Length: 323
Image (cartoon, rainbow, N blue to C red; front, side, top):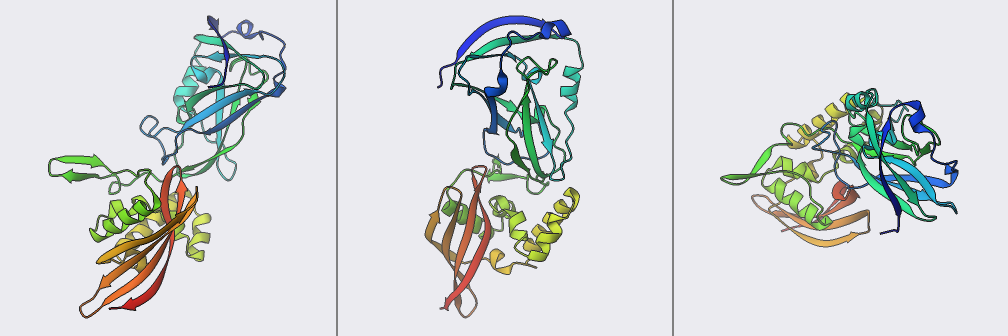
């Protein structure tokens, strides 16, 4: 871990203007703040504690002199997050955050010193600052205040980070699935390999376990394989997008569209798996039994890693033979 000189000076500071005079006439222009997702998972609206958005914050001293700043024990008094929609509309802050900052109170802080070339990092839950009420893609940035929030002097703005907030799981997709007759486990995706993703998806279809079948499928990209649907989805509101996704799932379950992806093979073999750090392909031979013959097809599932989870987003099918 990088060497950091910490002056752990426990201090009490009242939220009054005199309390926020700078500790020194420092040049913060050589300091930088970088934010990135700490743990990669699926993010949904609301659920501050159950589905947090943890962001790693790194403050780096790019200068030649020691960098000193104040850091509040409650970080809401040292930094601020802003989130924007693709139309550049800013999201609102949480009521808890507004309440904290509008109440006169005592704030504890430490003075921290970072040597040239060193960094100081910590983690925050963005949902403690911003209310994410609708699924969409948002752009996140952060401002750090070296002299605490009320002073707002020498603020440092971070990089922009995109966050994909997915539609909240429906009642059906959040069902607790029984594992044994007297036990149950919550259904959630795991960081398994691409071939295991495809294997589990096919087995789920064989057993008509729809929740498990959709677990590793990027439904948005699957639906957008149709160019007309893609244009309509791109121009739709958050509510319309949610309805389109639900309709697409319903059509798949009723076998009304994309017949090949929902076809049920009698058996299958995973023949080949090729993947890089972010994308890959899994080739599978699938056997479909009919009364008088068996049809053999080659499926190539295209997968992509998102937030540490591999998902199927496209596929191709080639008829091989009949037996």
